[in-house]
Image (tube, rainbow, N blue to C red; front, side):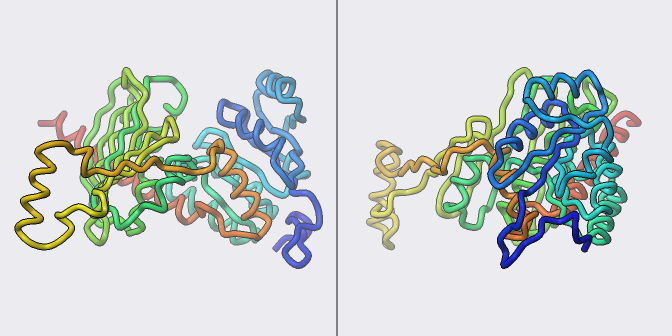
Length: 350
């Protein structure tokens, strides 16, 4: 443990303000800085951005300090949020962690498992924690759905987006699908047993549309589809379980739980009850289905995520998505991407 780089605590209560900075001022980094400057119990130190023009724009718009070097920012913080391109995550995170500075790394944790392992090793050496930015865990719809989860059997997700240059440094599996790899894995709560995958490059040299069918230990199955060449934007998850069906609109942060009403005759044994249920089904589904809107306190998911990181860095709770969990999601996503690339190669050679 590094001593003066960590937030000192007395009896579990912070003795001073939590000093936080942001590395990277692109679209996501801008919003991290916007939220972090007003985070409770926090002194927002500023932003490091390598592009002087962008740094000046963000500094003026948000009214925050900017740092021309990473080292300058690291000299003044207890923790950083890393919102730089994936290819730079390893270098930035290791530089911070070896000083004992806690890091929040936007997903994916790294471009490779080797780089992820270097990050985790640096965290162990520096006595600091790693949290990975799988923000969908903090989506209002997901927060509202969790009390209704009861051993999901089948989950279907669609994450579609029109093409933009942002994120094209990696395949769509690491850009978009990894959100659902992590989210669905957290909902099922079991390790991956096996998977199938297919996809194709469309507008770039890497995979732009992907589908994966994942089977988890215990028998749950998920069907994930991600595309960055869609004409529409869609982020929906459907969860099927014995107790009912959850429909989540992640873009809107809303959803509902549909289940059979509790006092139906089919819930009682016997042929008469089954006949009565058949009659109800023939007349009107609404007479037997209960629709429960999902509820959670409204909050910006990125704000919830930063709150959890602050609490973890202050030693109050474990990281919401640990570095190990981030590495696990990366491992599954990379395996899916490799399977798709083999499928594409096999198709071209046939």
